[in-house]
Amino acid sequence: MSPLEAVWERRGAAGQAGALALRPLSGLFGLGVGARGLAYRLGVLRARRAPVPVISVGNLAVGGTGKTPMTLWLACELRARGAKPAIVSRGYGGSARGVTVVSRGDGPEVSPAVAGDEPVMLAKLFPGPVVTSPRRRDGAAAAAALGCDVIVLDDAFQHRALARDFDLVLLDGRRGPLLPAGPLREPLSALSRADAVVLMARDDEPPPPPPPDPRLPTFNARLDAIGLVESVRGRWQPRPMGGLAGRRVIAVSGVARPDGFYAILRRWEATIEEVFEFPDHHVYTREQWQQIARRGHDVDVVVTTEKDLVKLEAFPFATGKLVALRIAPAVDHAAELLDAIIARIGRAAPPAEETPHGHQ
Image (cartoon, one colour):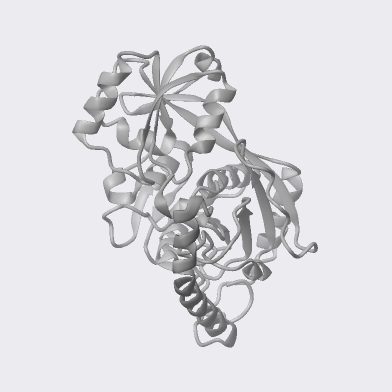
């Protein structure tokens, strides 16, 4: 657990003292969030529309809520229903400063160093366009030019410069103050902009509480492993989950909240012999690969996340030694959620240059 997470969870005397010391900064952060929201409501700041309908998948807390798996799930479900979706993200952690076409539907065309680990992971798994851009509206325009008819934004609830037709917000059990004394980017009152909420359950936590407004459409979901994947000459090959049962493993992760990753390994009866835990979006060095590979000789398999696999696959591992958990959300009443989204984007307003109101 990082020192900041200890503060957010008020762990021990140091966590309590840190939370108290950071509360004034959370107050200042809240003033900035409130002023920005007011500027959008008054039309001082305006949201521009994309050429096609836009769906946002976001959250209120930082990191580890399952936004990217939910984005992938939603894009695949829309595609299965006959739409031509594209995924657009900021490309966090990549060096690209403008619009980058990560994939046209046939796999990644750039490296994680350029586009970021999550967009490249999405490009490995999604048979449609994946685009990154620090300015999401530029990315949306580029995606529309590739022929998509709907855009799914990854992690964009706070990115209000691009108007959207449906805001899907994921909530876990984390509550408390705004950053930096707590994990929230916005207060719970920001859910007034949401069209639906998904409560994301985790094995290592109690069920998340419902949103304050009982009228807000609310669904339940949990992230679960649906298989393993191995990189074979750069192409990801599926492997059965049963291959973990009774195996001695090393767990390697560079994600925001790895406890859920460990819980899944234990649920599938893997014995975790050692853990290599790195910060979110970690870039692996040759020395770290050598250490992981050396320790891997003493276990059956090294297990990582798909987000980490896009970086670790650049290093040579013995055949079958490195695998990743393939994670997907299991959404209760998924058809009802998809019907609501499709109904909304089907009657979305025609493109306009700007819109000061609505879901921004």
